Amino acid sequence: MASTPFNIILTNDDGFDAPGIQTLYAALVGGGFNVHIVAPHVNRSAHSSLGGTAANPIDITEFSPGNYFVDGRPATATLTGLDDLFAGQQPDLGEESALKGLEKNWSKYTSAERTQCAARMAKHSPSYVEFLICLEMMEDSLDRQDQERAAFKSKRSNNKP
Image (cartoon, rainbow, N blue to C red):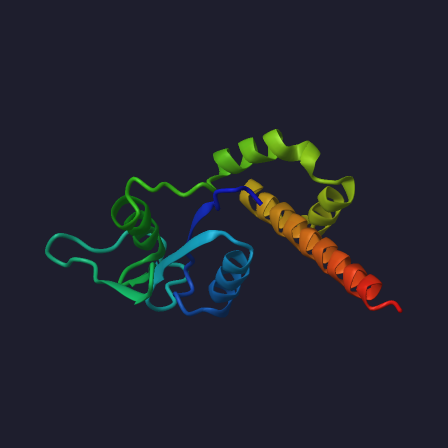
């Protein structure tokens, strides 16, 4: 994991409390990423166009620190997050920056990590963001496993008579 955590804004069309966005949020935060949800208040599937006007402004509600739901459509939630709530704090994981990150750090990932993430993504068309997150989370998981093994070996060697 990089020394400075990635800044990620999550949005969806299923609403801020949908299981998918909440699960992804928990996994990314657990992986050390700086994550914010900005999503519609309710399920707005198939309503991707912008909503709201000066005569009918969008309500924005902070439902937990740094996480918001908008009384609007998915595109409105995305633009609200990028242009209003986190203006000047651009997220790090756009497709372009994810591709650059993959190109720059490709050799730091093992062949097994790259293969496993590619296999996980083979069932759909993954984004560069998704592939990079998979690799980073796999690397963090392997680092934790190594630390646990080292602690276990140390504990075993200290307990020998």
